[in-house]
Image 1 (cartoon, rainbow, N blue to C red):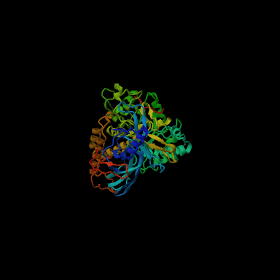
Image 2 (image 1 turned 180 degrees about the horizontal axis):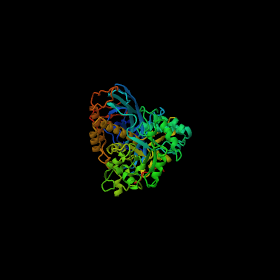
Image 3 (image 1 turned 120 degrees about the horizontal axis):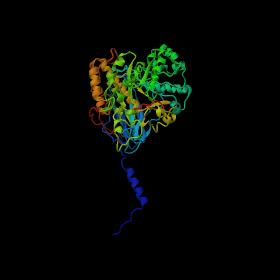
Image 4 (image 1 turned 90 degrees about the horizontal axis):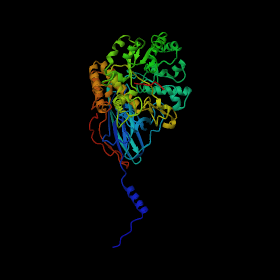
Length: 603
């Protein structure tokens, strides 16, 4: 018997390559997820292939289409939804940022989705470079799909799809939306004052002069469409006629925001010690004076002495009694320092509204502010979150955490490596504690370095940064724009949740609104709940609003829509099994049901 010699290594490799090439291409999977979760690259494919959403009129609603690879040249298109009217949709690519350190014990390192690069942006209407993109083998990448229901859209059922293609394959994701017969206001009921300080846009976008002012106005417009106000309007030009020209539309409700008539709810006085009279007269003549405030002191005694507060307040009130004063402190601390009469807006950190057991402000503290509020109709209580939501210095010992590491967990947080639910929880907690506004110190903190690569500031990933600089070099197009983060989307979701709770209260069932909200978020440090529970709570609120006749009288489509309704923003399960030979959707399983510096905030 004669044995044949083994093939030469090169020949063997060539034969093996031919055999591998002859095998069927590995199928990419296309599936869906709710907006209130973060799809990281290691996420495994799921049996969810269709989206079933609900929304009020004048509400945004989103979901995610996820591709688990390998897939190259991925693109997505949609014609929007049709039904009683046509509803367009926007598409975004979820950009990945790599985090070197965790923000907190409940944070994490590695790749996280955050920036949302638009296909066609909502500000200049320009095509950007969201598509195409590649998905490595065994990894997942997500596309953000966003709908806005116009305030005059008829209630009822709408349907459409998102088509995803890649080299050698494609899949179609069915989408349904039920529009509730009630309408959310364009101007947020929960006031806000989010910072955007001088110098950050100049650095990241390389603009100045009127180009900077126009860009600053675009940031303000995108903020309004996320139901927040960028209150620190500082473009280096303090001329009030210039202010009115570039920023007046944000206060008059005349900007090009998608939310029709949306108005900024606050503006910080920046006129210096000699400008009170001119600012007061200017804002009063335009009907904006109710939104003007003096940031009297930030976290005394860290940023100013307690004794500074009465004098600063008096300088403003002597010229304009209507100009409100704002101090970030607690009523207990203000009373102890004897400065409470000088303050119109008290802003305690959210931790001090209801702290953990054993801490000074343990237990609900909101009732302690009732006497303060009763003293003047001008007075309000706001709140804010700070580094106390994730830890105010150093790094976390993940292997052997300290008591301090454990304290800084579970709070509402705007960090990249906090869950989407915790990004969304702040406004529920604001409702629970009967505050009327939210403060946040900055939205472009990381612009001093490259925010696309690194957002580590003040021991947190994304502390003080909610936007990304959308330069043409980075996102394509020709116009400089702000790019929203997933966290900014979650803040908007929280603001819309607040509108649901407020509307139910206004319709006479505040007891149910408080019961549902308190059960979902019993304490600020218990903000880590499941997306399914949050969406179920929203649906329960929405159904009760409809029962109470919450549709706007005389508005189009005020009747209820027929058909089965999914949970607010929820998804129904199915499958899009996509193959690599261009045959379209591989099959749809039956729907399975509802699834369900800058100012620092120190401890």
